[in-house]
Every structure is written in structure tokens, then in C-alpha cells.
Length: 160
Image 1 (cartoon, rainbow, N blue to C red):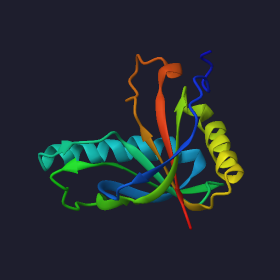
Image 2 (image 1 turned 90 degrees about the vertical axis):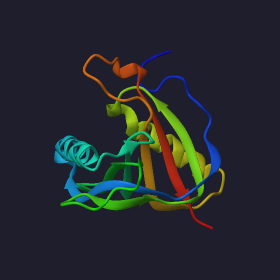
Image 3 (image 1 turned 180 degrees about the vertical axis):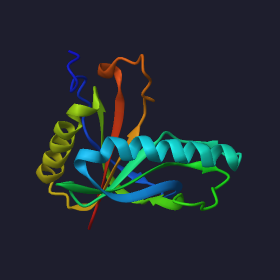
Image 4 (image 1 turned 45 degrees about the horizontal axis):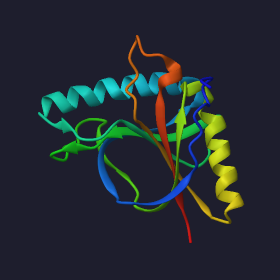
């Protein structure tokens, strides 16, 4: 079944290594989040080219706290070598530790449903989620891509 939440993959617990990233972070009104992503990834691409860096992992978006009317979001890439801060581009991080992980298959409009399923699984397992969670965009969006084929890794940092 391919309807934006198809191909359900069971969540799992993984040990994530901390990662230094090249990022941009803002508290953004949810109505403007798409513009923030577009603006940030454009600026990040310019810095990557100028600093002659290599992207070594897919794009990500790290959230701190549950999005509501606004979201505290950091978007970026891992690069080699590590980027130098420049303008609004900073050194960011993806945290290490125990992480609940699942993969969302389908368009971005249905991501919240997959996050809700992951949160329910975390609760059912008696795990304690923190307020840090992130998406890794395993499939790069392109104008001719089928939204139902998009794959997004969901990661939720767990507490003790």
C-alpha cells in the first residue's frame, strides 16, 4: 500500500553517535517553516561550495521541543571537513545516545502521523523521550520525485 504512510517499519532502539553538523537554527512560525527550509538549504549550499566541503550525510532537521505555533528547528548537513561558521551558518549537532528510530515512507504532509506512531510506541515500551528529535531526509526531494516514494528517518532521543 502506498498512501504516504505505507510500508510500516517497526520502530527500534539504536545507539546514535553524536555528530557535528553545518546548520542554521531559528524559532520559526509553523506557517513559514517551508520558507525557512528553502532559505536555509540555499544558504548552506552556498557555504558548502565556497568552503569546498563534501556533504557526507543526508540533510536533517533537528527540533527542540514540540512544534506548536512555532518550532525551534535546526537544519543542516554533516560535512567533511567540518565547516567553519560563516554568517548565519553555525556548527550544530545531532546528539548521541539511545534513540527511538522509525522510517516514514511517503510525503512530508503525513510526517506528523508517523511521529505520533513513534511517540505511542515509545510510551508503550515504557521509554522516556526527551525534547530533542530529528528527521533525516533519506530521499532527496526533487521536482520530479514521487512524494509517495520519499523516505524520512525519524529519531527521538531517549532519557534515562
